[in-house]
Amino acid sequence: MLIFFDESFRKSESDPAVTLGGLCGIGIPERQFAIVSQDVYQLKYKHFGADFARDKEIKGKALLKNWAFKLQAKGQKSHNLDFASDLLAYIVAKHLPIFGCICFEKDMQKFQVDNVIALDRTFKFLFERVDTFMKRQHPGEMACLVFDDRAYGINHKNSTAITNFLQRSSAGLAMDSIVRTPFFAISQAQNIGIQLADFVTAVISSQFAGNQNVTSYYERLKKAVPHWQSVDGHHVTGLKVIHERGEGSGETQANKKRQAAFRPAVGTRKPNTQR
Image (cartoon, rainbow, N blue to C red; front, side, top):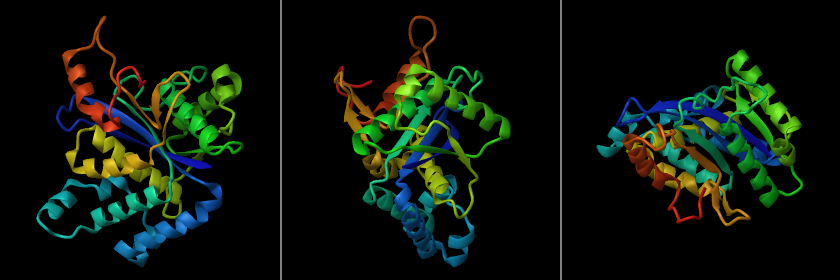
C-alpha cells in the first residue's frame, strides 16, 4: 500500500491569531496505482481538457477558492467544484483510505522535527493509525510512506527521525506493517498520489480552519476515513486532532471554544469512548 502525504498550513477563518497545520494522506494499493492514475487523468480531461490533464497538477487550494463557491451560489457552473465533487466520489467509491493529523499546537504544527532522536507526536499518531489500519484491513502487507518533497534540510531531519523511530524505538518496532524508511516524491502532473494527497489535505485543513464552504465536501470525504474500536474500548479514526495546550493548569477560554467548534468535524463524540 502506497500512502502519500502532503501538508497545509492555515489561519482560522474567524480568528487569524489561531493557526493550524495539517498533514494528511491517501492510500493507494500498489497494484492499483496505474489504474487510479489513468482514472484521475480521465477526470482531469473531462473537466479541463487534454492540456490540463497532461501537464497540470491538481491543487486543492485552487480548486476550493472562495470565488468558485460564490459562482456556484449565483447559479453559475464551476468546473473547479464539479471536478472536486467527482474526485471525492471517486475516492470514496474506490475505498482509498484517508489518514491525517490536524495540529493546533504551535510547537508542532509545522511538521518539522528538531530532534532526530525524538519523533514528534504528530507523526507518531499518524503512524499508529496507518499501522493499525494495515493490520486490520491488509494483514501481511506493508505500507510505504511517501511524503511530498520539501526543503532538503526538512526532508533530511524528518527522514532521520522517522527512520530512528521505526528502527530503534520499541513503539516504532511494533509498527511492523510500515516500511522502515520513508520516501519523498516531487509533486508534478504525473504523480497522482501526491496530487490526491494535496486535494484531501486542502479539504480537511480548510474544514478545521472554519471554512464553511467546504463542509459538505468534508462530510463526503469522511466516509473514506477508516475507524475502529481499540482493544480498550476507545473509538479511533484515521484522523487525529491535536488541540492547543491550555495555559497553566487549565485551558484558556478561547481554546475551549475552539475545541467545541471543531469537535463535530471528526464525528459525534461518545462519553469516555474516544481518544
